[in-house]
Length: 152
Length: 102
Image (cartoon, rainbow over all chains, first blue to last red; front, top):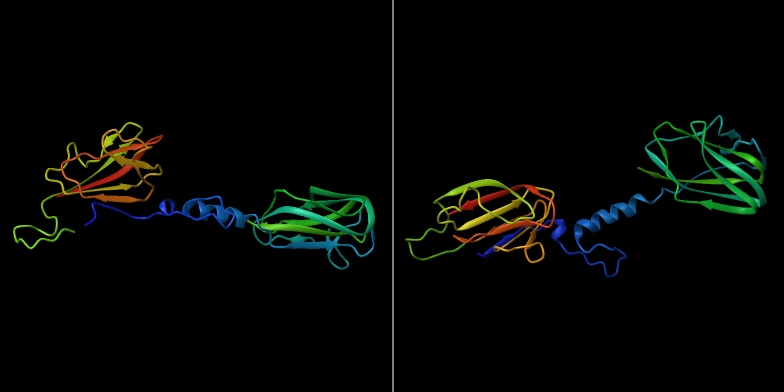
């Protein structure tokens, strides 16, 4: 029998990070690093917009002809809004405000531009929370708002 | 496991078996189940049931020269009447399970 015997735990198992972008050198940290990376991924955007010139006060629609003030996006599971972006059919100047249960939580603006993006957001949503959005200043040509949510 | 063709020698441990718990800090402590090492000890087992990494080695061991035992890791050492010491780099590991067999 060997004079020393020892069981392996993840922390004692080496991890080769030479060709995968990981920084960890042992398996425990590598698994935790992978979890952190996975948690930053969004599911893909939820989209709302308006098929026309949207002036201040115009609610954007998740479904055609259904203003989000009446038909908001209903959250189904714990989520976090991590980024938003907006596009317009022509250079526009205006601001879109995003609401959580009727309270403003984020804004995104265009300044004589057709697109903009905003990241590193941390707006939490719980099941049955409502997301709505409307133009709150200026006028935006055929705005399309993209909401990037990730499940917590 | 040691095997002998001499019938006077056992292939398994049958003489004694004790268990205990020690706390390990930045001051070395001997790995033993009781007040003294088990007489005629043949095997020492150390299980780290704490959240703090401990290091084992001879007297004078430090975290720089000792071998680590991570959380939930055990080591089994064929060692008799010779002390094995434990130490942490920082903090105290309060639940280190020790078993001695002879």
